Length: 250
Image: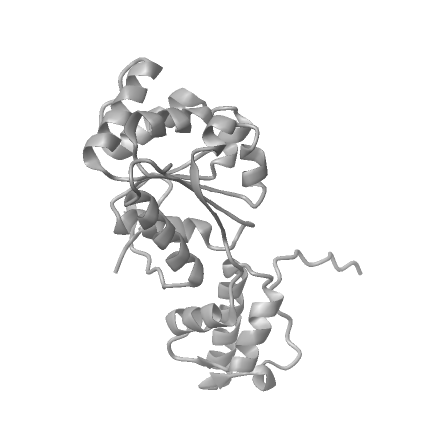
């Protein structure tokens, strides 16, 4: 089973299930990697926080041997290049232009894609043009991952914007996705279809909230000895909706 990647670009033992976003993003990356030479090769995957963008991207990175970086606040061009070379296992040169050449050469020679998560942070630092330089210098497929406003924010960088082959909006977690996640995280407790539908609704598209609510349902089954937990067993319990509870004052 494919492994996940940490922020350091290293693999972690995490199982990734074939949710809709995982399959959709992986297919788009394959199209960019196998595109004819006259087509651009950048894919932009965007959506709200918690919708499974990073898990989908890391799955695609592991499956296709991609170089995955997770951008941090405050990174400038030098920091981005230094980090990519670290992920590539190459000693970075001292100058920005030479590091740019190193990355382009490795991408071109290896044929592996570059995946840049939280690229919004590069937009904020006005370092995003570096991605265009790396793409132009290598011809590699590039995947950009960011928040739902990313397409609009990239519009001001026309030379990068015009090189996007596909804009792929992340999809909210569906009931079918909830069922897939329940099979993974609640193997000893059957979650009823009515409860799965409710969890999908209250989680507002977020895979993170879905997983928390599934864990609450699993705990309920363990605590009550129920092998199946549905809305009847759930009763009037509160769902996790990602909101902090108000302070209770005496």
